[in-house]
Length: 330
Image (cartoon, rainbow, N blue to C red; front, side):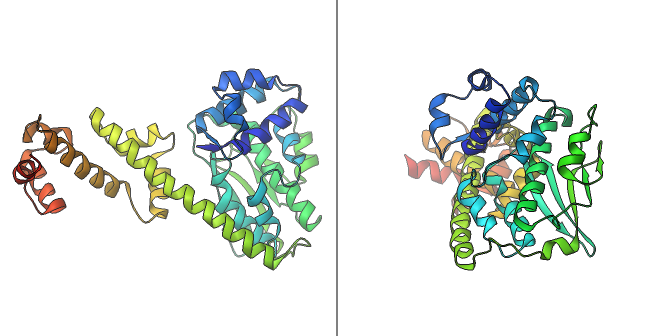
């Protein structure tokens, strides 16, 4: 899912570029009521569709770059102010990487610090060719570069920028905004900065505000991650009823990659195997209580190769045999 706040920010920039945002909403399948919910969420597929539509219709061949450099301070609310109150550039980038999933959702951001340089890596989580998401990735990089320059001055400058998509016809605006060598057709979208940049202090640093806003961000992150587990359980239950509860099938239904789903579940101290095991147990108990399916049908429906494997698993789950459980349910 993607935050409505992220969509609203996109539409604000799109209107300035002459885009009919009502048409974008209709074609992306997002209602006005959903857009009005400041704390709402939309499917990441709808967010990706909105970016594609806006990029195609904007009267600006460098829409993403221009939108990224002109985002008003504070448009992303508490999460943005949590980054602005950090003590230095490294603290800001660490919080961006940690909280970005609560906003964009079409990619994940990671900060990788080496001895001489640091990389901010954008990893797409939607299965769309890089060329179609050119403006989204350029928006994100331009936003980070210009916001860093605003906070820490001209010393906050990248040494190199890398994009997955092909080079556009003109890269003049890339040079003006990013002020760094830009490489295209790269394996990842990356913003590379000298290691020393991370230590640059921020004039906006506020320890008390940073602590309070950080706690608010962690609360939001915890709620979101819990929701990931709940959604994974719901999707697994639906997939099991349909006869295919594989990791790939469940991840597709949640519109994320299988590795991304595993990683997010791992951050909550669980795994897909554990989620599947729990859902199998719940489903087995439900089907046994209903009494309309044989033990073999239940075993097959749960994905076990033979009834004896189901029997062993059920005994492990409940301490009872399927036959005894059905009898007690009656």
